[in-house]
Length: 158
Length: 287
Ligand SMILES: Cc1cc2nc3c(=O)[nH]c(=O)nc-3n(C[C@H](O)[C@H](O)[C@H](O)COP(=O)(O)OP(=O)(O)OC[C@H]3O[C@@H](n4cnc5c(N)ncnc54)[C@H](O)[C@@H]3O)c2cc1C
Ligand code: FES
Ligand code: FES
Image (cartoon, rainbow over all chains, first blue to last red; front, side):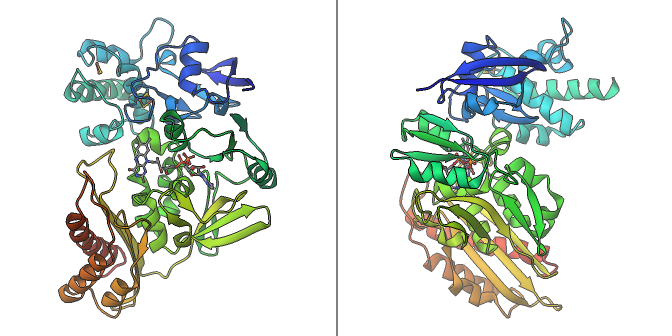
């Protein structure tokens, strides 16, 4: 298998990597770029733990080839905070105990951020449908929905 | 495995036609990557079509819309024109997967994957959508309903792929709707589904109907016998009942853990009836 040389942008930084043609973007992020925020829960698009944005669209990094990142803009959870300053979603997830083991959290944060960019004032139902592809096996969804709502309110008032 | 990202349809066709091993078109990858991961397929060549000209565009054409083969569900759902003209096609496609899957999945991929339960396919068939196909002998048009031939198989020849899907114009008083039955409300596969597209005259009488059923036979089924029951009516209870029975009679389903033959046969008639009433109301009729 011939390796491919890919130029891309990750969280605003110009990045280059080499990958095999059948390597997923998730494997590239974790194993080649050291960005281990995105997690592999299933590898088949069901759990959302690998959620990232690709040219502004929320996607499962496990269902994207690394090669497809060429010329694209990728956003991961590592891009949420500004320096040491956490994103309101991050600080409210901590404040309101919206995580336990944390495996689902990076994906949920990236997904929730994408929602709030599109809809800064969502209903609980809209949040639940938007996050239907993000599974959490320990926290329970109520706390997650509440933390998203509180962060959304904070961002609207900022 | 090789990965190619051609920039012309000709180049893509040549790659697909001359590959001696297993070649796969890659669009949104939400089926292809799952199948590779599961070891169901081991392609020698992946042809990513997302770099082709106009392949991600939605273009108005003769009162209808041409949907590029790489247009994602998210892009389609944001298009006010398509949503207004073909609400049933958009609602069917938006039922697929999660927000993440919608960010990538395409109608052409849903069609070419060949699943009998593919959600957008009955809606496209009810809409009389036409696929534009590129191939070694040039471009051709083919009704969407003629593309699936059996589970996982399509009528596309080696070297051929879909470049766009055309949703035609329709008269003012016309609309469509799609309903599926799933045990869960999200992230599930249809046990049975029905798409109905109607045209009405000024007093609300149905002048034309196309009814397509999913997941109740090896491929999508267009049920003319059901359409006949409601054409010329205002969808009164008796006509709807006859239509529902015609849908059930057209079933040739499988028994599996998600639904029995009896259940699928019965529920598909109910879904068709409800979808017809939604389409009727959207088209401006009062039932
Ligand atoms: C978590 C999850 C949930 C899902 N839920 C649903 C659901 O509810 N309902 C449903 O119907 N599906 C569902 N799917 C399946 C899948 O998302 C859809 O079938 C989707 O529309 C496939 O589109 P794609 O662009 O991703 O296809 P791809 O994976 O890129 O391709 C699918 C197949 O079609 C071929 N192909 C793609 N584009 C073309 C083309 N232009 N010309 C010729 N051949 C082509 C490919 O070679 C491949 O064989 C789900 C998938 C996942 C991962
Ligand atoms: S790891 Fe990608 S969706 Fe589960
Ligand atoms: S916090 Fe453990 S999976 Fe969500």
